[in-house]
Image (cartoon, rainbow, N blue to C red; front, side, top):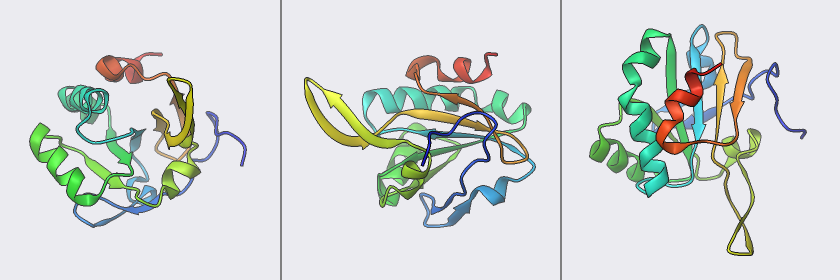
Length: 151
């Protein structure tokens, strides 16, 4: 599969959220969606990113956005993360990594000279028609909302 780019239709999402409830991208037709992929609940960068989105949630809602986070963490891990940081949006539990693979957010990473497979932090802005408007590959976890609203 070639890399996704702005203007492409967003790949379908059919997964479960933190409560085990089915969530699909079709559920959000007619709304703009911030679909953000992150490595792990309750780690420093991921917490900073989630809290930044939380702190600007009212602004996202005013502009018609829904926010959905995606990681390979379990539903229970997501519930704890949401509860601890009072996150107002849903988190997809992508334990089989299907959604991440479909969006190119699972792949080879390098750390200290070693290669391993892991979640690639990135965000997709999807318009009301289900088309990708913007992809953010270099996420600034502490200023992610600002990155999304810029341009």
